[in-house]
Length: 229
Image (cartoon, rainbow, N blue to C red; front, side):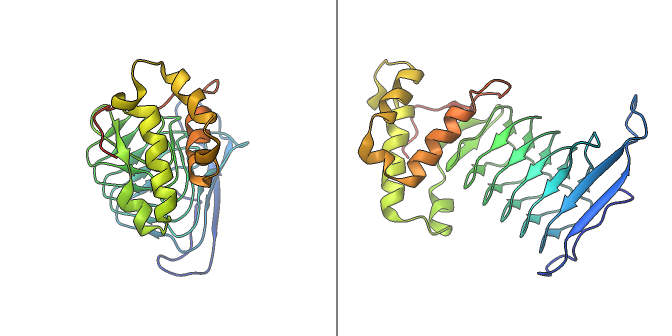
């Protein structure tokens, strides 16, 4: 870790880290920049975690994350809690990772992307757009491959919630059901499905997709219509 930063000891449930130091990037003045690392994180060999690029921001690592060897978290990233990043996972600047995500090895995430809770990023993926909550992506460039069913099971998401998520995913992303309607039309149709929207998980997935198209965001990864999720 860079000089001036600190963190709680790996595997321990107490102690938070707050660090600051002078920014030394090319073309920048010696501005104070910040890094906050929460509790009970395990950060393995040869990881690099950068402080923020400006004094008004802070790179943040939440609680209970496993960050395996040779991972990189760049300036101004916001990492939530209970995530698992396998070896050589690389996050560019300003990436947002929510909670309970999982990356396989050698994953690269483009700057300003958002990675939704309970999502899975397959090994070797190059992620250039947002990954909606509860989904799974893979490839270069990464494409949606369905729901992260194993991750949902491991995190105790109920069978009923999973069934609702499957129906919602099929309505939006699977060509056998979507026919030839536009993506925006399919989202609008899902928003009228009162019974499905009673599922908190469906509402959160829909919110995640919608927010990815806000101004300044990158949209979501392209999707494979043949997904069987």
